[in-house]
Structure formats: structure tokens, C-alpha cells
Length: 360
Image 1 (cartoon, rainbow, N blue to C red):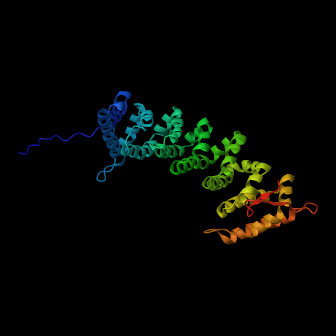
Image 2 (spheres, rainbow, N blue to C red):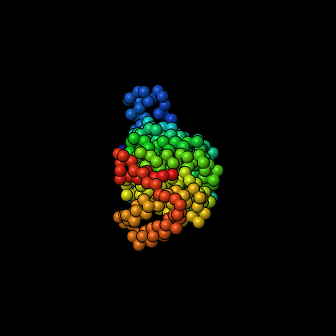
Image 3 (tube, rainbow, N blue to C red):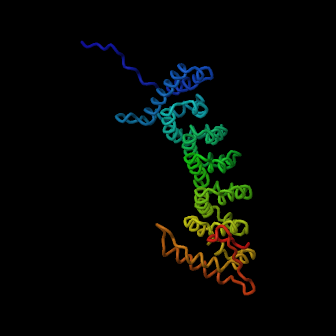
């Protein structure tokens, strides 16, 4: 007869695990945080519980996760109000615990009971938690974790729609220009997802917030930061050209102020920005209903524009044939617009003679 001195621990049920996770996170209270030894012990407990959650959701490499347990864990986490604790305690957690939480968050959001994503429904009833994640970009220690979790949320239309309409959305115009490159880049990735993942919701948002949005967006297009200008140009063409936003595009290309911005970007010292600007500039020029003021600006600056366009190439990795074909069409349209009684006015800056200052 064999004897065992150690009794194997029974794996926790989803209900038990959710409760244990909640208790350990609540243990990170004000008193614990200021006591080093107490904090270390409390963080170890959280990390152990997050590791158990990860195993239940992903398996351990040998045993596959149980689908019913995964769903039940998501349900229990909502029932126990653990999600607010995930967010509010994020800045206290150690690196490993944060990494596990981000990985688990993606799986939890996908769990459905019937036709309902239970964690998504929880967030729909607590939208302020999304604002909390957005504000996480102010803390560089957790900014990337918050960004990852936000992008998982944005995959769901109702959550993306809330983010667009929330006052916290305006914060992205600040975050994408933060001095910390990694944080700014991550913020731009989230900003891009909000504006591209769900075209119908984006179209509705732009329709009702057109002036405010593009007033802020122009600041990105004219930023002194090269990366911001380039990324903003590429993103603009993405969401403007979505079919649900066709009416937004028509309005945008009929406005002289936007045209002036694109003309200026077309003369940027960076070839990459010139090329990106061209792909939006060409829409203004090809518009059969161009306002007279845009026609006049094109005519006044036609000589320099034609020179610039003739010297512009598709760039590395571009489709040369298509680019040249589009460029030829735009050149012909500009030539057609030239008024016999309008002299082109080209003014060059004294300190930057290779850069055009256009006459508007």
C-alpha cells in the first residue's frame, strides 16, 4: 500500500476562482500599498490568481481549456464585479500580472452566453470604465496595457461607438503627440482603430461632430512632428474613403480650408508626406463640383504644382503605373482649369527656398 504525504490541491471552480481574484485585488487597499512587506505578499497572491485564471482560459500546454469553464469564469467575473478592480488596480500590479491580465482580457471579452457577450454587456452598463482606460495613457507605466485592453474593447461596435462619443475621445489628440514615442505610437494605434474598425458608427459620429472633429484633426495634419503628420494623412484617407462616409468625403473636399492644408502638405520637405498628401489632393482636383475658390487657387499656383507633380514618384513599394496614370489625369485637370486672366503667383521663403509658399 502506498501513502502520499501531500494531498493534491483540487483545482478551483470558475466561481471560486473569480471570488479569489476579487478578494486578492481588494487586498491591494490603501493600508497594504504603503506597507512594503504587506504589498509584496498581496501582489504575489494576485499574480498567483492571475496565473490560475490564465491556465483556466488558455490551458497549461498539456491540457486544453474547458470551454464551459471559460464561459462560466467570464460570467462569474461579471457577477462579482471584478472588471472594475482589473482596471483600478492596474497601476499597482507587477509587470507579469499586467501581462497576464491583458492576455486574459482578450479571451474574456469574447465569451458569450447565448447571443450576449457578458463582459461587453458589463462594460455597456459601466461605460465609465472605458474612460478610465483612455485616461491610462497619462500614466506611462500602464499606458501600453491600457491601450491593448482598449483595442480589444474597440472590436465591439457598441463600445467603439461610446468611445467616439465620449468626451475622453478628445484626449487622443493630445496623447498621439506625447513626448514618449512608445506611448504616442500606441495611442495612435488605438485612435486609428476607433476611426476604422466600424465604418457605419464612424460615419454617424463624423456626421454629427464634423466641425469639432476636423478642427482638431487639422492640428494633427499641420503638426511640427513628422510622424504625426504622416500617420494622420494616411489615416485620413482610410476613414474618408469608406463607403458609409462618402457624404463626409464630399463635404470635406468641398471646403477650401481643408484644400489649403493639403496643398501645403503637398509641398512638404518629406517625399513620403508629399506622396500621402497627393492621394488626398487628387480627390479635391478630381471633384467635378469643385468650388470656384479651389479652382482659382489651382490656377494661381499651376506652374509650381505642375513642376512638383512632374517630379513626384510613387516611392518605394508603390505602384508606379497606377501612380503615373493618376498623376497625369490630375495634371491635365489642373491645366484645364488655368484661367487666361490669372497669373500664377509663386512665393519662396527666404530661409527655406526649396519649399513653396502657396498663394491662397
